[in-house]
Image (cartoon, rainbow, N blue to C red; front, side, top):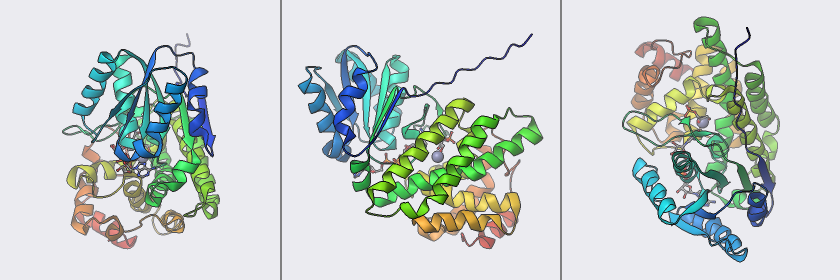
Amino acid sequence: MFDKSTWIRLPRNVVVGHGVLDETVDAVAELHLTGRPLVVTSPTPREVAGDRVVEGFGKEGADPALTTVQEASFGEVERVIETAQAEEVGFLIGVGGGKVIDITKMAADELGKGFVSVPTAASHDGIVSGRGSVPEEDTRHSVAAEPPLAVVADTEILAEAPWRLTTAGCADIISNYTAVKDWQLAHRLKNVEYSEYAGALSQMTAEMLVENADSVKKGLEESAWVVVKALVSSGVAMSIAGSSRPASGAEHLFSHQLDRLVPGAALHGHQVGVGSIITEYLHSGETEWRKIRDALARIGAPTTADELGIDDETVIEALTTAHRIRDRYTILGDGVSEPAAREAARATGVI
Ligand SMILES: NC(=O)C1=CN([C@@H]2O[C@H](COP(=O)(O)OP(=O)(O)OC[C@H]3O[C@@H](n4cnc5c(N)ncnc54)[C@H](O)[C@@H]3O)[C@@H](O)[C@H]2O)C=CC1
Ligand SMILES: O=C(CO)COP(=O)(O)O
Ligand SMILES: [Zn+2]
């Protein structure tokens, strides 16, 4: 008997374009959600978008509630849950960067209420995915959470966000190259289930971004468009896979380990990009890693430890310990020796 089943949970409305923030009310109306919205935001995103979203719902008589978060922590998730309960809201809207989106997503998951994502930065694919990540003592990687019912990505706002957030989003997509290689390796060596559809979509997304790298330039609103489309596509690949495998391999383990060793030193996307240069070297030796490095350099993302603002020894420590982070087989196997890590980081010019 054929007894496999799968759930692919995707956003229903993805609205991307110039000025679409003002269409948030319409995008939500289409979802037939009931009750008041709780808008969750943080100080700067509130100024650039949060207050406008509240105003939009206010005009429609939806009586929106608003709360501002400061940091990505379980304490903040708890606080948002309590606010949602006290205000008796029907659904949650996250307006901000990855931290705000993840706090809102995880609170909505816990509450069993609908979640809408309004990113103000195109900084990584968590802004469109059903994965949430809030740092815990020993955990930095994502876990399954409530996927957004709708994503409203206003390219005018995203284009005005600090440029480094956009290059981080690009680097998160470029890292899909090595993530897919790691997934295929785990499939071959450990019989890990592999989805051809999710793998192909993730890889194609990275290829299309690299092909369109010339449209990714500071000051060009088109950049935000190109990056958001890629982030959506990467999020869909993760939904098809039912895990972050298509977009997260050894380069992500490396980044998660950096987050533990030097919290807040660099952006997620920038760290995974540099990790991808090294893990591509570990996968295929002399040539292929240059393509990753050149793609990152073309969009202005960091390609060295120095550019990340992280010292060489921390990079080596992260590389040699990253395999312990989670049960996810990658090119790091059961650990890269210190001399091998040093050789890979030196050969690729990362240190
Ligand atoms: N759910 C997932 O799969 C993933 C989640 N993450 C999580 O996401 C978080 C990092 O997200 P990021 O977006 O990189 O950082 P972030 O959310 O901390 O944002 C970086 C900074 O940019 C500011 N900002 C956002 N939009 C802005 C705008 N339009 N103008 C001016 N400033 C703006 C924010 O206020 C913040 O100070 C981490 O907590 C990480 O664990 C990271 C990757 C994947
Ligand atoms: O960042 C992600 C994909 O780009 C999520 O991956 P993790 O599951 O490793 O956190
Ligand atoms: Zn990522």
